[in-house]
Length: 140
Image (cartoon, rainbow, N blue to C red; front, top):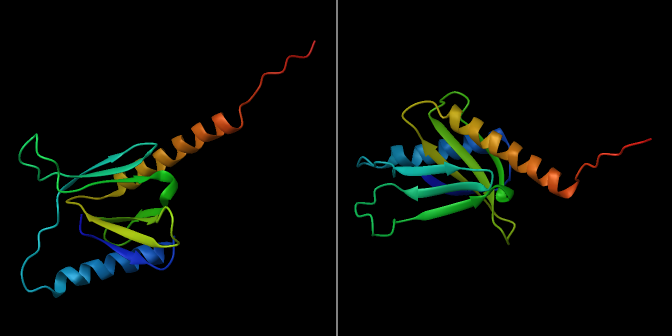
């Protein structure tokens, strides 16, 4: 996990790319070498769960533990030219504010983007099955 920064708009590849570039420039401006935080990202049809992976002791609480509900995620994607960078945009649950969360991977982040897409599809399918159930009608 590189950083989370506030953005003006809730979706768009341009917003995502600008956010990734801004975070990368923050890392390049520093004189010392900064190592990104290693995290465990769990993607489900409920949302994205991010946990600090540097936890040494099993009984010690992680330094951070974030959960972003899918209903608060408005956009996600990988950088179009550098697929190692990935980000998603969330909206604040109460205020009209948005944030972009930027990540860096050793390999391509395309599988993460695809798994979030599948999570959105599954969540939508379950919502539609609950909100608009289909009924079998038999005509004699």
